[in-house]
Length: 488
Image (cartoon, rainbow, N blue to C red; front, side, top):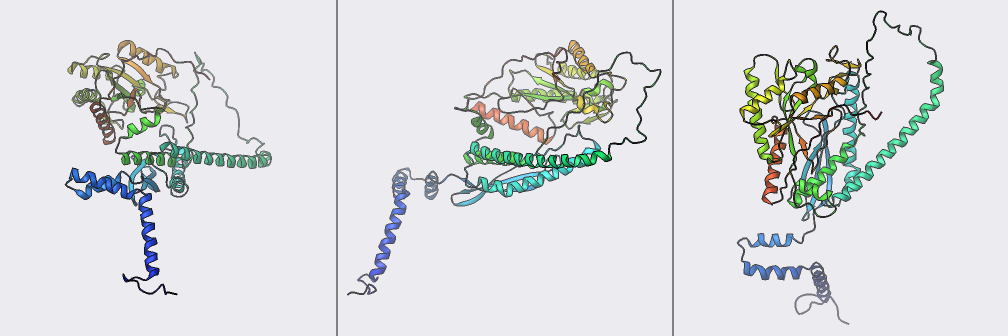
């Protein structure tokens, strides 16, 4: 019987030779199952004829085509401040790319928890606490359950990611609803005990008697109470921020544009061959609270260029118009002047016609025709002037008897200036998406607004180079002549 440990003729023992043979077989099977010999033969044969200057760069690019797609490894949430100095969350997304973890993108989303025009002193502290709580909950979601939920998924699979996020959020809503029902049941149990102590009216509570000697000629239409703001679920900002981070990561990995990525998600079939740019709604003047009386209702006078112009041509025309308005503003020595947050001049006026006369003079200087080269839209924003604690318009006492006169103001302006073709509903929120006919970004001032306008010009140029730039149809604006009936 021979000893397996006895060295063979090549210097190895029989056992070592057997182990080495098995190792070679496993290696060959590993490479064969991953098509490595086949790929190596293909690239070596073609590379010899191509003779690239960077041999190893050529090999790296070749094998990169067969690498596994980037998969989400983790997401990290951090608390930061948004553009308005309010706390919100930032999401950083990491992916495994060619066996290494890399940071792909950062994204953030505003954590709006109050509308300043609907906020009173009593509700401000509560709103701040809700904002703080929302950020805390969002960070808990991002760094724990959502991190595990998305691990291993491909950023390109946006639909699956959003489905998982939606299902998670729905579970949180159901949990909250169950908790609210439990709290309600507890309140109903304790309510009879509380009603005993509060059944007696206070001693000094007396009904107010109507004042004598004052009779109302016509009954005033009651002002509608403050509409409660749309409830925002604490932590909900995490869902939007994570979804956007995945979309931006997919765009970066595929070296494409976000608007094309979103368009592909919105189309069941192939994306449209042509895409048109939205028409810019650009703020030209604001009367605001620097003016008196009815003029305070004119939050913005907005210019809309004619559809036949390109986006770049529209911005140039509106920039020239804004410069003419600026010249007029600084030649006037009366009335307060300020640059509004909307990116346009805010000027105090005395008469309703004055802002339109300023715009008309600016158009004349540039040989532009109102109603042809551009139209005007009014943003009244009456809700910003309402004092809901006093239940009256704070600046309209003795001027407007009821809100109906706001429509009368608009219709009288339309008769004098036919180029005014629309009135923005002050209580209707705007949503701008891909394929929208209009986009409202404010005036041509302030960095965050100008950056968006510049991005839109870049998109237009990209579409034009690809031969995919569509054209907008002619305006068909309805003229509002009377108040729409209240369904309630």
